Image 1 (cartoon, rainbow, N blue to C red):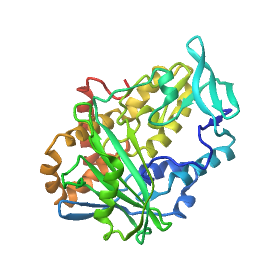
Image 2 (image 1 turned 45 degrees about the vertical axis):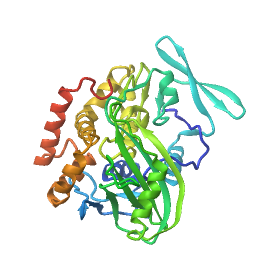
Image 3 (image 1 turned 30 degrees about the vertical axis):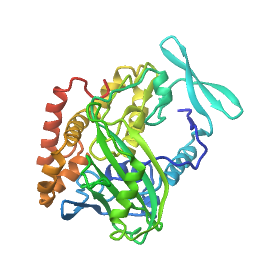
Length: 382
């Protein structure tokens, strides 16, 4: 396909993100021929989970997915992905923000791009909208985000650390505020192998139980709490935060010749905030779909539901439960006392289950997802 890759920023550019690459993301990057490039950065074996007086080492489960993960700052990862696309034949245009569309009947026939030199109109046969959680262009096309299901408020910063080469990513499931109260979220430390770590916090919320927390001060409280254990130094650098639609909680993700993918389509895991893998997967899937179908308006939302509906439905139901006051405090200690339960939770929370997995844990997850999806008043992507 004749492809024009447009970005509002000029590369290399940053993006608010935890920078973690789970085995699901690794599998997609392997398909792009980037495994050697990833292994030259950092490789991690799994998750070190902290909380409620326990610390557990939980290796990536493997199975039909890779048994290793990585972490690369988005400033570098996205730039390399863009370069890979250009080498494959795409043309790239930086510093051009997509602000509107021109229609011809029920099809988008052109995109209005705002640049430093003025507005430019570019004709298009097909349009893939990948403009992030706020999705300015998606809103122009009718995208609506529903906050009745769980969403997240998250922030990240970079910190110098003597544990930058740690072979484990770390998650603190007992996240407390300055007053010592347990929050419905978690903190993370992802080693980058370059002398620093990505440190962040995320809290879950719903329209009924909104997040009433200042994320950037909470990051500092978290950093102060773990400073000695993770040998942090130099203070927080480049702190940023974002509001995350999750679990397909959006309506109108496609039209006749256009489709939303990744964060724009709320393809974010409600249990761990992961979005890179779904961005890569949905990008691959939408191209395959466009090659086979001229009209995306029905087939794309249905494909997203087929691909992610069950897992997103049960995940956002479980994540929403965590927002209920007292639930995490009551259940957290019991879960952390069991390596088996936490290994199972790691697999389910990370959606490290594929259609090819036939073991009991995979069958239970899919069964729960089907039951959850059947009872949703508004299923994912609808």
